[in-house]
Image (cartoon, rainbow, N blue to C red):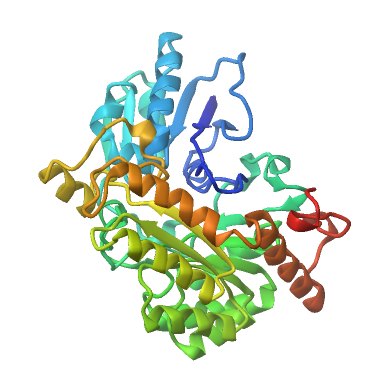
Length: 421
């Protein structure tokens, strides 16, 4: 039986250097498929959909709100050809009712141990319109390694550099951040995977560079310390979301190969300044994730924030505009106050203003978004800062003997102000 798994294309941030990472959701889903199904994976962000071939079923994995309309378009096309379509993923969970109009079956929740029933029903001609496992989480011991064998690795290089592979060490998040939908999707309980299973999966990945995609590793100090201790012998180099603000944890993270972290920067406080300094003191770079358009943001406040980012010497910064994604506190509040300007999901790319800001016009916030990118990268373009980050990791790989030439390869290439590659 042939199963065609599709990851729809989506528009990247307008001012961000464009590169593509191998997606995580589809390879985790593929690992849950029962034996006997041949999986063909197409990431529409790096390759076109095939014009030929007739799979027995199509799965559409959607992660982002900005993907859903394209996903529905693809689903409609296959259904017109009489090929059954199953939709799943985070984007499907956020837009379940709308997606149901375009799919033969909608799968909600985590897939481990559950796809046998779905595909068994398909083979027997009794596919249900909804498989609702929302909130019924499988035990983390049941989460096995992702099916990275379905990826075409050659498509995920940037200017000859091997990009990171994505892996997760936990699910769920005990935090409930204002603009985030993770607490809705994965629950408010932190659900760490057994450390030995995480280490085994990391060790088997044929890539020395990883992105640990957990929402935050700073949720269980003892587990975090165990994880980092066990990662040290792997000699992997990795990035992640925040790490515990603790010198012992940060020291172990550095020994384990922490390359850089994504750190939300939401104000100009001494706490943020000190946190960034502590990362740097442990040799860990920082990419600031900076959300613009919060109710407390005035025009002058945003400009001060950008000056602050330059002052604390962030290694990289990614600017986005507050976006009221469904099933977030932001969406509920803005919908109640009639502040949402459009429900065109194609516009929910996090680089377009889709709501009425509190302290300025939508047009002015859009201008300040451009100002943020231009000002932060005024002295060093983004691709040059990326070059410096990759140069650092290659130097560390050479120091500990983990460098593999095929991963490279920056030697002989020149970027940014030293000449575009």
